[in-house]
Length: 321
Ligand code: TXA
Ligand code: MG
Image: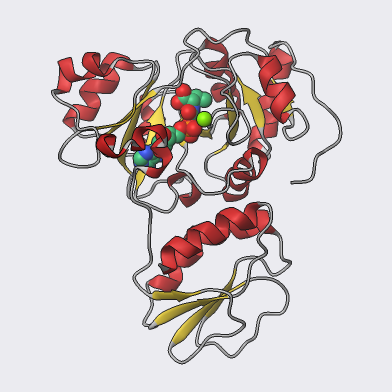
């Protein structure tokens, strides 16, 4: 992604800086901020483009679903559906380093990109005082993965964020060292059996003491080292053909760029200007829409294999396999 050039220094969390962070987040920009686990790379979770910018800044070669941070249970319930066991768990561990994966609510306002296109959402209320103030200032749910480039160590102090992402964010707030220093525990509560998607700051045994045994998906295959790959991703029902310049018989077209043909029975353009951030922001919503019609298949125009295009093509390749 283009570097802004300027290398940001972390700012102290004065009321003015916190208010400014809230404005930047509302405006769709990225802000590095502390939580009790690790520093997060925050963006407005309801803004498709802002969420796409997270993946761009992290150089992620694929779209992992992201954790959405909320200030309170009221906002959590606008995003996800909590069954009895989910309510009991979060009553005990929120605010704190427990993330629950629950079904998205019917009217969930979060970007489909935070869920990587599937119908669940990961939620947590952070306990850190500064994180809470930033959530209050922003007034929107915040998607926030750890604030490091893909493959680098998770940041536990503001200087780590500055070194890694200092040219790619609009602000970094300094809240000192994170008290836990490891990520939140992620528990899946969308299916019948509760699952441990990622071990973390809350001990699994403490969770099992309340809701019983946790299933550990993929543990035998060593998949716990890449928790982002554990959950099933959205795949369209229609057959998908990549790198084609026009739709064939019975196909709808997922176009990209200014040279989209207009012969297809139906066509949506990921980005008429060829902007990869816009394309990533539109990807899941457009795939869902094209997949719901009468078409036999979805033809996809070529998307450059660079920057966010790598993650977009990765997703499309899995969907066409
Ligand atoms: O401690 C933390 O949780 C930090 C701080 C900043 O809060 N955040 C963090 O976020 O680690 P992130 O987005 O990198 O964590 C993503 C984890 C991955 O293991 C991912 O697979 C899982 O949460 N996850 C997110 N949404 C999911 C979903 N819908 N289904 C299954 N797993 C999900
Ligand atoms: Mg991480």
